[in-house]
Image 1 (cartoon, one colour):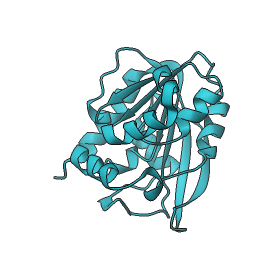
Image 2 (cartoon, one colour):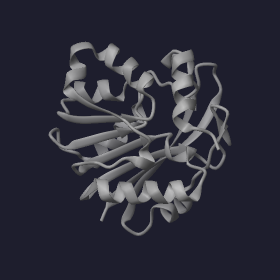
Image 3 (tube, helix red, strand yellow):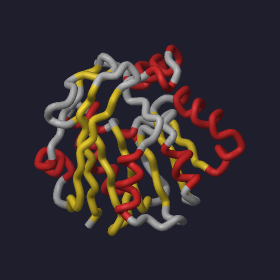
Image 4 (cartoon, one colour):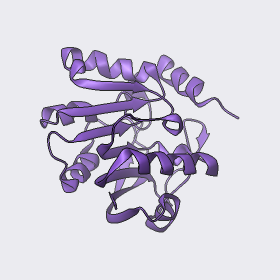
Length: 204
């Protein structure tokens, strides 16, 4: 079995953030979903697998005051901290595998673009669903973005799962109500299309 942490540390030690397939100059769809969720500016937001993503920059620019970024790769987070400069002090940074995450406080919004679909083992998906359930306040929101059924079946030399609304609802269980879904064709830095689905859930 692959060591996830070693894999992702190696990726970010060998490549710049704009040299990986999931790189986005602007996380437009994520920001649309966050806006639709209506999370208050002082609400607690966590970006799971945020790594070197610029989403944290955009959240700070929008006035959000309680932002946490979690990633399994310390190297990925260091890219984001360096980019933010002094503003990095406004963010809580956590190096952890999401399936081992044990938050001390609950969040108003959990955002995950392209972590969940790497969890190909059922035991890991069950851990993830349990942790999200414990981590989100009732009435909080979960945003999951994953490869669509017609999206890639591998990424970063790893197998992935593909999701439609029915399958992802089944994985998460009855504590989450799907309130919005959308699609995105992500274009990689080398101009290859990747089909994504975005799901917005309400924590009951």
